[in-house]
Structures are given as C-alpha cells and as structure tokens.
Image (cartoon, rainbow over all chains, first blue to last red; front, side):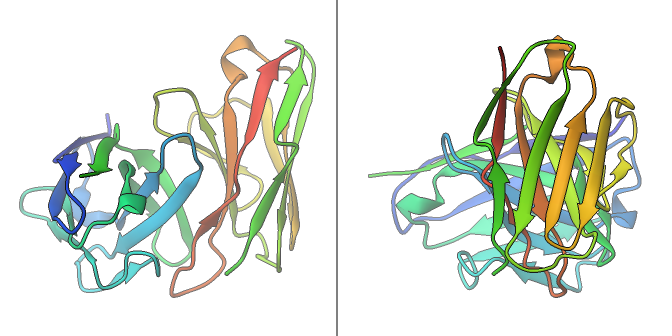
Length: 121
Length: 109
C-alpha cells in the first residue's frame, strides 16, 4: 500500500523558516517524481513545486520561487520542502504527492495526509 | 497563466441521479486535464487524468470528457460517498505551470 507520511508543519512567525518532510513507503520512491501542493484554509488547491526522480530537475510556482527549495533523499525514501522567508499568505495545508508520469502526465496519483503551516505573529 | 474555471460553484443533486460538472480553460490544454475529489479533512483523490482515463480503483460511474478548453466530469448515478468537492487541474505546459480550478461542491439535494 502506498503511504506518504508527512511531518514538520506548525506555527512560525513571518520571515521564519520551516522544513516539511514526506516519508514514502509501499512503492519504489526512487522511480517517481514528487510534488508539493498546498491549500489555504477554505480555499482551492495551488501547485507549489515538483522534483524529478533523481532530484536533478526542480520547478516552482512563481509565488514561492526563490524562497522554497524542494529536495529528496532516495536512500531515505523522503521528500523535503525547505520554506524560508515565510509570509502570512503561505499559511496552508501542504500536501506531498506522487507525480503520475514526469512531463507527460503531471498530475498527482497519491497524496500525503497534509500538514498545516501557520505563518502568524 | 492558464486559468481554470469550474461551474457551477455548488451543485445540488439527489442520490441516484446524474451529476455533470464543468471545467473551462482560458486557453487550450489539449487533453492534459485531471479531476480530483476531496472530502472534508482529507487529501484530494485522483479520479481522472488525460481528460478521460479513470485512475486506478475509480468506479466506472465516474467519466471524463472533453479536450481543448471545455471539459466535463460526469457521475452517472450518485452514491452517498460521492458528495464532496471536485477540482480540475491542467498540466499542459513544460516547464510546469500547473493550475487548478476553484472547485465545485457537490451536495445532496
């Protein structure tokens, strides 16, 4: 069974940093591109970032470019999102997700349970 | 940015009836469109990709159609577990510029 177990959310002050983790099991993590998607409270979904299977290619939404960094450790079956210079409008539930097929089908098969990031003073 | 517009915002349908949800793209996305279902407090679930291909384990009562700028998700006979929010997502470009619709809430009539 595919499982994506997320951790690392919480309350952080504006301008602060936070790192999210997503531990994968039940599939060959190193064979799948991965992504982060977020959802502000009561709002819709917003794509954040995507990373290739090797980690050599990464892409970001304009809203987070230069502030967030996606990475992965295939030896640990874990995906990360380093978030710096956080702003109030980054407040959201963050989901990690598997990418169905790199480039060809950039939709999201399996999702983590979500972790809340609350940016507030 | 490709803007995805879903309609209606809320759809009220009785169990056993058919539901038709629409998604329009501001420019052509070919067939690079997915549909998701989200229930309160849960992560989204992939239903349809490539505009019309059901994801693994998705019941046959869910079907997708369309291409270019107009897309439809049809649920042929609504079950109680189908009442949820549905999102469409386009993934037409590379490097990715992925965008979602704002969602349609499907509620019990």
